[in-house]
Image 1 (cartoon, protein in one colour):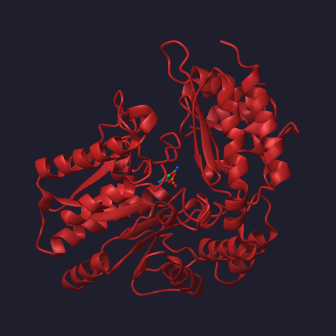
Image 2 (spheres, rainbow, N blue to C red):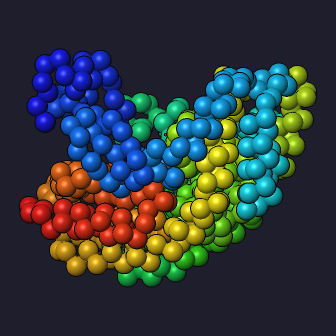
Length: 446
Ligand code: PMP
């Protein structure tokens, strides 16, 4: 792409520092400017249409241009465009959403704390657990175990939880007291000759060793995505979560499920925790919560977390945490309507129904010699391409570019090329998406 003087691309390059981009490359090449969206499609400023193969950032469950969400936002804007939840204030959308989320949760939860992004949600969890440890007279019980390749956000604490080099390098992270256990990617981390069962047993043993080395009474919680997303779409092997949870139970360590991608149907059930047999004490929800039409996230806590936190707020006089936008009424109203659509149109059922086609089309492509591995569950999946030369991401970047040229937006995470289409996708559209993806793969030569 060459940037024309005074074009929107040139103005973007002049003024906009992009997240997750190489700033010098963005200045020189410009960025793709999207103008419109409808269903699973988005259109750029030249009129070219693309299938949004990643639902934006794993988030637009109901697709683009959903009139009911536009109407819900409009109605709430007119009624009460803003109010906060500080100092015992509330409003109907926040109440109804909190009630709905507690009712939907697959395990008993008692309260919802609203935040605006997945990162803020996870930061809030870290702070609530530190607060809880003090409340319980166990001030040493504040360490949190996350995982290599886990993704939990980019704020100071959540970036520390994230187990990816880009989120730590030159940011002086992770914070002390946050450790990273092994990644449950069998294809990437299994030892020579190790079966899946042995791999799982080793990860559980290594977790136990880490806990014992640190001191079990110093560990507050373990955080994990039921299925890892941004770390490369990593579906843990059978038995992984059962083995991990057995270790956590043994040492009285809480489990936090980061459901920011998995929540609301992505894995073929409403929550990834159900698909993976997890019984979390804390759940973090965002993205498909509002289909990202409005920024909103929610932290669900059970009584083991809530009761000591409530006592501590009573002792101190207030829970000194919260955001101007916590439970924003327009975002909450949009989220409520979005969940209604997911339920009424049985989008979770749609994900489960189309999953076999999705996974089999991905699997077919493993016949291509450039492919190292396919991974997926529900409607989230990826092909990992073989690394070309010394640099990670050459093959993945070429594949993403070939898809884009052909009218499909995907995301390459290094050499892993992820697909995560809107949950409204039809069978016909799925075929259209994979025809482009397959053609892009066939076009690659190194
Ligand atoms: N957790 C998970 C599992 C995520 O995938 C993401 C975002 N990709 C986050 C947290 C952070 O969310 P946000 O970008 O809204 O801060």
